[in-house]
Image (tube, rainbow, N blue to C red; front, side, top):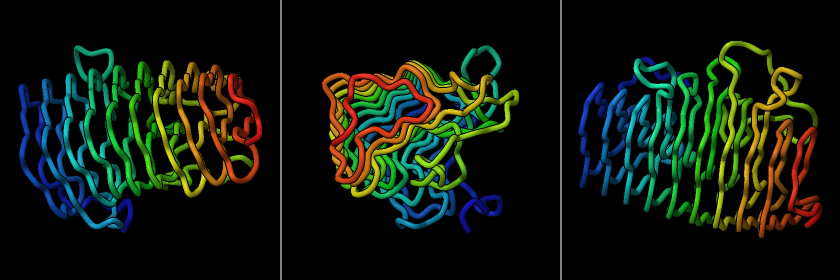
Length: 288
């Protein structure tokens, strides 16, 4: 049952380990998450293959949680949930951000829910780079997800040199995560996204996406910030450079500021390239 994780163990967990290396291993069919470094420092995960059935609930591949200085490289990930999920559910003593200085490079993402940050971001996430990766038949591509009960600051995120084929959607940055996957917000494009202000408000800023090519059989994606005066800057300063997406429908942008496109295109078979609502979007003409 999706979300019913308590009775099911992770396959491998490391807690407060320094100078950790996991390399050259294959992990298969975990009952829940496969590989979980928790509050670790100086972590190298390389040449690792992780596989689980496509629809096996909550079988995340690699979930660095509250970790500092992590390199995930040359891995093949094919699971039933997040292929990589960077989590920060709590503060860590001595750090302004629980999860920081994380690089994911040269990886192949197959079935699964893609490259995620969240949904737990209350401890803060910063300085994440995802580069030189390939996505094929993945349910999500690049995703930042949280909500008003477990959110925090996510900043200085870089995605570059990414190829995605048959991925839906390519981009999801949402402050309104509803524990479902490709349709994080069932009202996307139809109205405002709202949330009650609290002490765990999600905020995403300083995000750079460059040299990305994607084909999406459904929507290009969504950027969904929270509505209301107290949450109007929940998503800001997002720049797309040389990003090209071909999709059935365009990109939904709601309650976000400073979303900029340069030398980019969204080729939507139906409707407009960008559907903006209470959002500042520049550099990409409306329409196909």
